[in-house]
Image 1 (cartoon, helix red, strand yellow):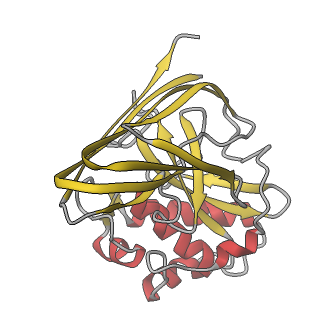
Image 2 (cartoon, one colour):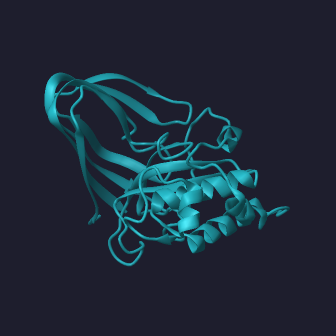
Length: 271
C-alpha cells in the first residue's frame, strides 16, 4: 500500500517568545515493511541542528527557531510504501537490549488491577500467545472513547475509568506486559483510518505497543483496534512511554502562553 502523510503541528504564543529548540522523531523507521518514497520536515524559520540515530534505531533531528517569534509550524509531508508484516518488526537495526524495556515509568506503573490482568498469563509458556491475550484483555477493559482522558492520564487511571484512547491502551498494555516479565515499548506513528478497519473516532496520529518475543523479535499490538499493525500503519519511533516516544519534544524561551493545534491526514493512493 502507498500512503501519503500531511501532518502540521502549529504552535502559537500570546506574546512573542525569545526562541525555541526542538527534538524531532519524525522520520519513518528504516525496516522491512515500509519504504520511504519521499519525505520532508520543515519548521517555520527553523535552523536544522545535529541529527543522529539513537540506540533504539530512531532518527533524531534537532531544530532551533530564533526569536522573537509568535507562531511556528512544523510540517511533515511524505509518501511511504508499506507491506503487511503481521505485526513483526523486521530489518530494524538497534542496539538497546530488550530487557531495558522492563522498567516502568510514572505513566505505565502497575497497580493491583493491572497486576491482576498480568497474572492471567502467569506461567504461560507460549509468549506470543500470552502477548495476544494481554492485548485482548486491555481492549476489553478500556473502551475507546475520545476525550475521556488527558495526555497525563496514567495506565492505572485509564483502567479504573474503563475508557481512553490509543495512548491509554498502549500504556496499559506496557504496564501489564512488563508486570508479566515481557519487555514492552511504546510506538508512535500514523494510521490510515479510512473504511471499517479502525475504531470509530480514531485519529491518523496513532500509537501502539511492541512486545519482545524471544526467537521472533519485537511484535506490534494495537489494543485500540484489536489487531497487530499491518500495511495501514507507518512506524516513526519508540520509547518507554508516550512522552519518551513523542514525535516532537522541545521548549520555548519566554513567558508566553502556548496554544497547540495539530492536524494529521493519512491517505492511500492508487498504486
